[in-house]
Each structure stands twice: as C-alpha cells, then as structure tokens.
Length: 387
Image (cartoon, rainbow, N blue to C red; front, side):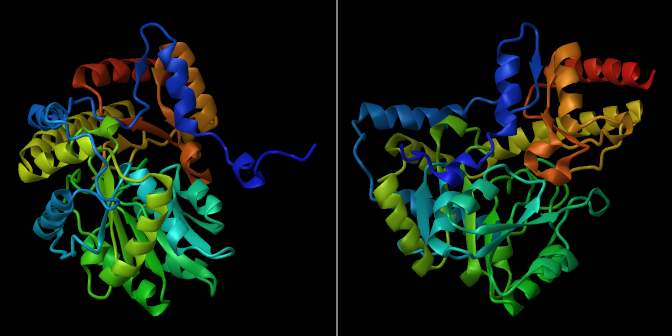
C-alpha cells in the first residue's frame, strides 16, 4: 500500500512545551510554569463587547481581511505606538492568532529551496512552518553572552544567494531578550544590502521593561520589506479568542489573504468585535498587566541571584531563561526531575532549538503566590543537586 503520510509532516517533532503541560495536568498539587498564557482574565469591557456582539446576532462572516473597523483600529494603534502608517484597506490582514500569520506569511513568500534564517532559541512554530512552506531553515544560535540578541555579524555569516526571509523573534520567547534601536539599525543595513525580507514577530511588543519596543518596520527602508506580526493574546490576555494580524506591503498582503481565504475564510467575528474594543480603550489594561509582570520578573531575577542560579536579566515578554549547565544534566533531565521530585513544570530549553540546551524556560504569566511556592521548591531542588 502506498505510504499515506507526508514525509515533511512526519519529520516534524511534536512541541516540547505541550509534553510537560500534559504531564502536570494529571499531577496533584503540581505547579505549572510552563505555558505562556496570561493568568489575567480578558478585561471585562472587552468580554462585554464580545457578549454584546453575540446578543445582537453579529455571527456572520466578515470580509476575508477582517472587519474594516478593526483594521482601522490596528492602523491607529501602530501609528500611535510605533509611528508606522499602514493602509487599512490594503496592508492589513486579520488572522486566527499570530500563528496563522506566521504560517501564511511564509507560504506567500517562499519558493521551494529558499532559505529562511531563524535565530534560536525562539518560538517553536517558526521552523516547522518554514519546512511546510518548502524552505530550508538556516539556524543562528543566539548566545547568552550577547543577551540572546541577534548581532549583525551573526546574520552576515549565514546569508547566501538563496536567503529569502529573516524571522525576527523579539521580544523573544523563550529568553525574554529584546532588540534595541541600534541593534535593529545594524540588522536593517544588512537586510537592505542583501535584498531580503523580514518577518517580525512582535506579539510581545507591549511587554518590555527597559525601553519601549521599536519595530524594525519603523526604520527607513524597512516597511516595504517587512511582514509585521502581532495579536491580542499576550498584551490583552485574549489567548482563547484566537486573533492576530499581519501588516505588510499590499502585494504581500494580497497573497496572504488569498491563502487565508481558501484555508480559513475569516477570523472569528465575535473576537474581532471584542478586539476593536480592546484597541479603542487605548493602553490602560496593558499597563496594569505589564506592571504586574514586571513585579514578578524582578522577584524571579532576585530569587535566582540569592540561590546563585545564573540568569541574564530579560527585558521583554514574560519569561526567564536560567542556565542549569552547572548541574551536568540535559535540560530535559533537569525539567523531568524537577517535575517528578518537586512537582513544578518548566520547559526544557532545547524545546526552542539546540542552542537552548543547558537552559530552562520559566513563565511568569502566573500569580506571585504560585511563583513564590515554585521558587521555594526550586531552591530545595537545587540545594539537593549541589549537596
């Protein structure tokens, strides 16, 4: 019988994040610090707008690109926060989460054999989406000594005549690393010189704790070669609403919309009405949650210092990425033993690429109470390892 399955799909490894999430869900008194999901409820005024949309029977398809009003509010937001001007009718596409935007953006750009540069550690979907689009992933191993930033020299070293796209995953999941304006300016020069495109995943743009986020699309000469991806899951605690968006030049958005049209039709209508409300209320909800995350971030960094656990200070997203190399075990072994012995779930660093080996990801999108309990268990676990 003919082999029924796609070799490309079979070659993909399951997400290393979900494994530990599934284990901890069946373990009594366990604490999970493994999933990047805000512990806040979606702000009530946003939920209320979604409920109102249902009550008014607004359950029809929207246009493929999304509600006109939502696309206008997305453009208002990006103008207000990043100083970038987009045409809501031609340069914006509303998607089912940022993940769909990553997938269809790569499919719209890639021809078989094109190379996609992916800095790692980074979000687990980039490499599989590149493979499924027919690209060859080219990995840059980011380094802790550089605070896991992408440097111009690292980028130059891997560009070839087949390079088509650089994925720019900052603020970064899992490391919490950020790129500042000077970093981006150095990268932008190389991008323009080599005539390649950037997919800038800015889902954590509102969650930075040192400086305000700078989008590479805001730099001279970069808007026309950037797909800017963002969404509502992280900043607005709207993970289950499944809503994201992509902004890019008209010719790219047109092709992305074509794929979206055939595969999805449109993003959830109720979610779109709720998202309009989220953006219209400006940034008060985001500021409240960001303040809480920053408090948790500082608590964890100080706790690591007290226990002598090496960890660079992250300034974005809601993750810390401590180094566990001193214990002479793999990230997988560390995370497994920590879960079995102390009932705390973290994610092995190698789930985000080979360069994540020797680290674990800890999410602080959880209550301070849970974090304090988990840190006491980590303190005990490390003490036993060092004994």
